[in-house]
Amino acid sequence: MNRVLSWESLSYRLIGGLAAAFLLAPIVMVVWLSFTPSDYLSKPSLQFSSRWYEVIISDERWTQPFMHSLIIAVMAAAISLCLATPAALALARAEGRRAGGLTFGVMVPFFMPGLILAVGLLMFETQIRLAGTYPGVALAHALWGVPIAFLAIRAVYQGADYSAEEAARVLGAGPVTAFFRITVPAILPGMAVGALFAFVISFNEFMMALFLTAPSNQTLPVTIWTSLRYEVSPAVAAISSVFIGLSVIAALIGIWLVGSRGVVEIGGGKGEEARA
Amino acid sequence: MSLRERLGLRSDRVWLALPAVALTVIFFVVPIILMGRISLTEHVSGGAYVKGTWSWEGYRSFLTNSLYLKTFFYTLWVSLLASAVCLALSYPLAYWMNRARPRLRVVLIFAVIVPLWTNLLVLLYGWLIMLSPRGVINLWLMDSGLRDTPMRVVYNTSGVVIGLVQITMPYAVLILAAVLAGQDPALVEASRNLGATRSKSFLRVTLPLSMPGIASAATVVFVWAMGEYATPQLLGSTRNRFVSQEVSEQMLSAFNWSRGAALAITLFCLIIVVLMLVQAGLRVAARRTQM
Picture 1 (cartoon, each protein chain N blue to C red):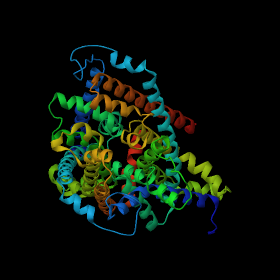
Picture 2 (cartoon, each protein chain N blue to C red; picture 1 turned 90 degrees about the vertical axis):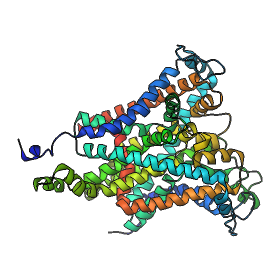
Picture 3 (cartoon, rainbow over the protein chains, first blue to last red; picture 1 turned 60 degrees about the horizontal axis):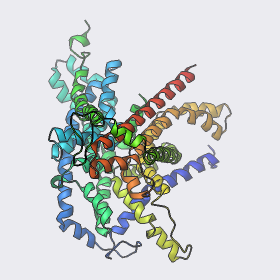
Picture 4 (cartoon, rainbow over the protein chains, first blue to last red; picture 1 turned 120 degrees about the horizontal axis):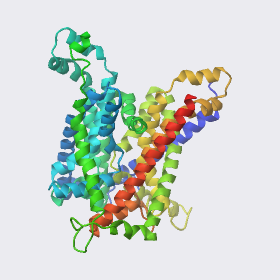
């Protein structure tokens, strides 16, 4: 094999590298600036201080929304897992029009912009007195949590050995035993990564939260939004870095659970469904 | 009756998907219908809308207003531009990801997953502190004497495009990478063995085979961009606005739900039309390749 770089291999590395640098630039900048010792945001320097982190962990204005976000994200992940697991098991190997229609029914909110969902949900949840409550926001976030958990569990289940389940049944296990002893262990990584995806999506979601939360359960992204418009203190950079830190941890867990290929397959599954 | 059937292995269990579908129906379909109904109500100042009334006013008030129509065209045009830039950057990255050695590939995937899972406001805020007139890059440029006046990159269309590309690119890369990973490497090999140059085999084999992936990535990115609110609000100008900004204003500050719903329904229909056009295009393309 010749090791001479052709224009083709050079150009995709160059543009791909640029694209990756573009994606990471704001992240690096926010983290760097969050360690500033000064009172306002300026150029990044080589002086570091944890001053603004001390400010945010002692300020209720940031810690309370953090707790609200956490509660909502846990609820959203739980709802997503409970609804997506049976759906994925049912549809992973099903074929035909009906299965296709049901898959579409599970996936369709995933392709809707947050704004459209948010406007409709505000009107609907105001009528049934769900707006401004924790379940109100969590159920809204589950509209995106269920499809992603569905993709994750389905991908893992499709890769699993179906015959093990049959073997268990042939050998005399009842459907319930076979489910808990064979199926659940096989799809566990998918369930874990699905719950993780759903949690992360809910924790980050901003548009529906802006429309559906009340001051008593405002989430962290909504608090960031209001402070982005009225103040530019480095505290925002510090709280933003907390988000970045969580995202790094989540990415590590995700890759550990299903491998880097698995993450691409699940994340890219959105495109596959867009074509179906 | 076969053994499988007797054990209930082939039994129909698609009904297990019904709870998930019920969530879609209750929290997506019903709200959209309600939104459609409210878009047809009368609005009087002091209330969001008047229950039980019928009126076209919500639609008429913006369809006859050239300012609102401009908003729709601006949203459409900037979303198209951002989708094109996003794909032009995502494809090479996805391509590289597929060919890189395992260790480098994990690094590249990590570089895509972290921004994917970082709050979009954080990403936009990062661009704001880099590119705003008093931001990091302008301070560097002016301190080093390269420029006397700050560059105007944000608070205009270029700012919106940068923001949209940033937040949509991770999804586009993953979609494209998943499609490229599914391609049979033997096809490229065969074309090379038959005498095609590297670039020719890329243009004649790899690229055409990834067309469905490109189309679906473009759809996801475009639809997302069309509905974006935070990006134009933070990085755009105050003169050229996105439809979502108008919708939010009507819903949350002007409190005219009839018009807010009418705008949202129009945007929703526009998105559905785009999705259907892409589906139709793909079907035609698929039929042509089969022949």
